[in-house]
Image (cartoon, rainbow, N blue to C red):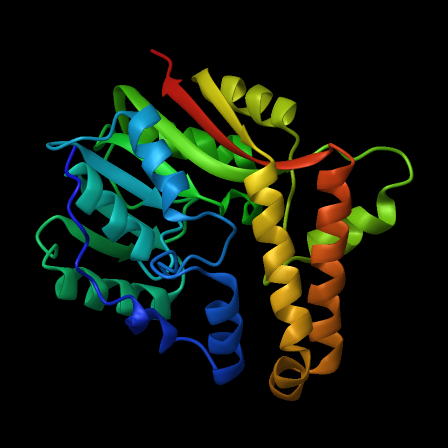
Length: 272
């Protein structure tokens, strides 16, 4: 796999952000870690995904929920693969295209505005598919996985990062608050639920890697960023929304500390 630097100025991503959000991102991300991802995953997560999914030169990879394109560009640079990103948001597509062009990867990193539930590609188009902490915005994951399976070639791999939860009796208030979301409505699964839904959709689960301490540290950093920049964010986005996010991260940390939430890297193969 290629190991050279991406050579991309990811500050382009910040032009999507408001002044308060720029303060927040500067607090949360270490230098070089902000690829525009609105999640808890650093480039080291993406390096591990490249390895376990076997992404390499000559492969055509689908990135489901590609956002503003930074992780796609990073993964394509590190692995040598070609990536087609799918994102429902037009603003994300526009900035992702600019980023790919600025990186010199416009010939093998492209972005399409589309709904992941209705992918605009022929059957068996891709060698692999990835998704980076966005699957929780999809309510019907079995249908989503079936659509991804359709566009994968026989033997193609799906690798995704996703937060998982083990909710139990008495967790209704916490679940309702968390499902209201960090930015959009969330639909959470346990890891066992993910495994069952993948099997139902026609995949064989190959490997699952659980992130706990590193994941907790990043969730805690997001929370502290919201707390320390609370007044600036509240002035811009409203006190109610700001305080919801602070409580959101606090509940998330409590679930992690109880051993009932983590970030999981799941690798599965299309069953044929």
